Image 1 (cartoon, one colour):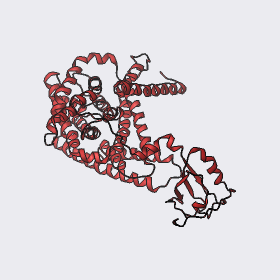
Image 2 (cartoon, one colour):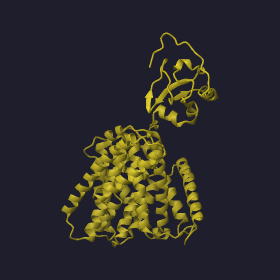
Image 3 (tube, one colour):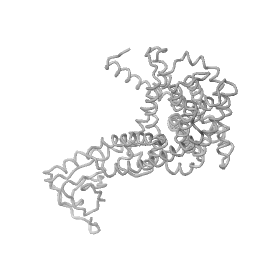
Image 4 (cartoon, helix red, strand yellow):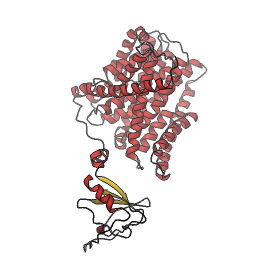
Length: 501
């Protein structure tokens, strides 16, 4: 059914507002927001009250890949480098060895009990082997979950870095099934090439993006988000065209950029956090549209069986084997085993098998979707209770500095005023101590020809200087009057200890 553009705008606006309200309710009641986003999509779909007919796996896959790219980039930017260094070994073991063991475990289950062949069973396992970055970031950060030790960085690093392994295994098994002549040796070479290119291009893209942001000196601040979006698309597109792993590249790109210093860093972090939320909403709503609830009922029994196996056996097995060389307590390993949240990534990977028309005893998209729902509903809602039960929960600490939190507050911003010394102003050639500023007003810095000058007593003003002044809002009108072109300056004798610029 075709809708006028005005109706489409209205539908999109209502869905976004409903999703925002749902995220607020989800945080209040301890339900993962992504679950409500999916339910919104299901409710407006062909079998819901909305009646929107949608059955397009190709579009679902494309939108999902685009969304994951921006979610992974934002997750990389928000990940603190100190946390990465602290959790690097555990995160890499879980994102490689853990993913492989999960895929093999589910493959055995599917082959032994569900009528799958070994190749299709391992394909099913590979599809569901990764924990989902969107799900983990949403739950841990959205609910401000505080965890002892390095549990949180381990979980975030694992979820942000295990998609590449899952993508490789999924596409590799599809190639083995559809092209029988493919040898395991070919897949090993492909693995090395994909990961190496993803590693190199991702790191280089992060440094190149930082250099571009700092060196271009764009005239309009609004172009900086456009620049970063361009680099995100460039990084992923170039990596995949060259045969590399784009998901690994884009996560590393965000990680490198996030640990760097660049202009407009706080605003760009907030912008990409907003983009990541928008992508989550769009992705989960479309995934909800793509599913048919009646088909979920057909796979419910098998889905419960697979979900229970993954939660109780496959995930703990992969965690305990992967982390065997690591010194961690039993409680920590049990908790990591429980927080094996599945989300959008497995559902999107299921569309690859669906589009490849690989025959399976159970429709893979519906089965994976059902398992994800069980995982999010059961594991996502019990993270805090399980952490408390295992004595691993602690109050969350603020992640940003006091200065950054002040800048984010409107009350602090209202005390700052920026004024320019015009070319014909009477202030040109005057010293700061001669300005006669109101008591309580303080010049905190001077921007002169894009250079920062620390103001001192005898600093002499020049034309087109920009002064950042900290003062109570009621003095702002007086300050603007003092900086008018025809304002008179009261001569004040500087104290003997005043220093020069």
